[in-house]
Amino acid sequence: MKIFSLLMVLLWGLQPMAAVQAAPPDGAAGPSAQILHITGPIGPATAEFVHDGFGIARARNAALIILAMDTPGGLAESMRAVIHDILDSPVPVAGFVFPSGSRADSAGTYILYAAHVAAMAPGTNLGAATPVMIGGGLPLPGPDDEPKPDDDQKPQPDKPAKGAMAAKVVNDAAAYIRSLAEMRGRNAEWAERSVREGVSLSVNEALEMKVIDVVAADIDALLERIDGRKVTAAGRQVTLRTAGLKAETIEPGWRIRLLSILTNPNIAFILMLVGVYGLIFEFANPGSVGPGVFGGICLLLGFYALNVLPINTTGLGLLLLAIALMAAEAFVPSFGILGIGGIIAFVLAAMMLFDSDIPGFRISWPVIAVTAAGSGGLLIFLLGYAWRAQRRPVTTGVESLVGKSAEVLEWSHGQGYVRLGGERWKAVGEGNFSPRDRVEVLAGRGLVLVVHKKHHKL
Image (cartoon, helix red, strand yellow):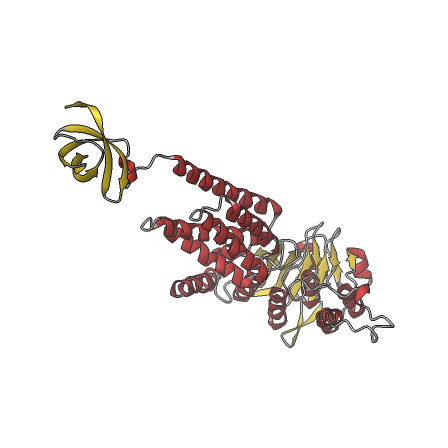
């Protein structure tokens, strides 16, 4: 736990210091527009990037922060963290679906509604804001969840509970986006429809229905079109003076890049797998050190990723069971039964581990196939090694002496002592032997050899 805590301190503590040091002091330059690109699924890395980026923008004397978005959506907790930063920002924020061909679906729609200025580039779209992950895979309410006329005569305790929970989450999401729309004076009715019905809009429809404020082809056009607009940022009214502003892009720091890599479900899954295998190898070969250290680091990083990603506990349990079964195959002679069961559990675990239907927060099938094939290959190698070991001649113990030649040292009444490999052994056998006779070992009975005479002397 101490190592894990130190690792977290390093990951979370160093980057903000570096970010502040990298930013120029207040007043060092004139007002500017600071651009933060939000690309791909919105997760913990995105929330951290936006939070740090807002601090850098203020240090750079920014007159406007532009969130250039192209996202399919993301995690609700990360989305709300971004929105909190927008609502608390004294610097006006423009949400801009850019460049052409981009989208702001699901969580991106909420962020666009929260921004002081909502803009889109030609050829973009937004919407489909219905929550897609509810309580660990709970489905959204549908026609089957509607109450039937005879429902009171046929109580079904499971369905009403499930429908009620789904309705709670949808109602909460609808109320949240409606409050954002009313705060910014945008179309609240369509915002609620995007949550309840999953509808989407093209850029022209969004402008016509007052879902967005402006359409702009690029950053310069956006700055020109919103110049003079009045917005309320952090409780005070601000008149935007954006025409001719210098636009600068804020790049993510090393910690954000590392966090983005670690919170990729595919990377997190592989880190967990490599970590467990490294520890298994270390325990099977004590003193190797390298596999244990590398495996421990990978496992800690994997646990960190699991801490910030939406995981399914059943999937995690299946993953641990799969690894345990495949490890047991190396020590228990089950003739592949444990290993095959482990691979089946492994594939099921990979499918269920990350509890989300959001693109970018699922383990891809190629990763599942490659890791399953790798684990299967390792299993086949272990089985082959065990089979060859079973067929290999015995090399230790009394049984390894069978068939070898020994020299009689003394003999009397069917028993005596022989020399074999420089050692003195007690022996029994039929017949009378003389010293220096050569005898052959037939078997071993504890520490006594059974011998018979050979037909030559030294």
